Length: 302
Ligand code: AG3
Image (cartoon, rainbow, N blue to C red; front, side, top):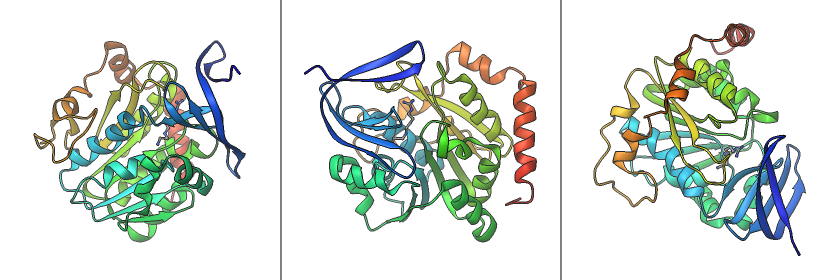
């Protein structure tokens, strides 16, 4: 039989993968979840019709979302990961031997359950004794830490879905402000920030939103074949240190398949059109929205 899965990047452009078998398909309280066995990329996690990760190329995204901020920090001990119910980001974070404790916050327990069953090379990290799991909303979790605990983490990683549905708040300026408050001095925030080709407004929103609370914000990219056919972006914020200039150990203390010390520096080098997007004066409409969202969140966590 000829079974194909298509992800629509726009109504006029889609990517199609041939499917051997649907391993799981269910509606969770938050989203529609599928695990597909594909011929080209192995098992694939799909949420609401969007490819989240595949066995074949997950290492690229997970190495880049974890090692860039952790080596930018230098000596991370406490790490918070929001999203990434597959466990891939947790697995990479745990490879840093300074890390003592990882709080993993995932809104949808069903994602972890499905990945424990079908993607054990990612999800087995979730059973590590250094990991504490919290099945709750990441926006609320960070607001509570900012308000009640104060500076707690060395690195916060946001491995979210696209900015629709439950993930919208994770792209907002009030969330970034609380994340800054939840970070200890020298702390680093990294978020997956969408496709600079198809999702320019989301890229800009994260970058400008984070710039309101972090003195140093930079964008970096990685090439993930199953995401959108162009480079994927991540946005990183620090309290001043340039993450691109970090002193990355060379050789690395563990083996990687994408990330290298040279790539750490190189991934911050951006094509001219992306540099222009980030450097252009903030569009009036975006400025108004960000101001409004910051004001609305007002006293909360401020
Ligand atoms: N991170 C998913 C990144 C967003 C993918 N979006 C897209 N392809 N349109 C969550 C899963 C990886 N741990």
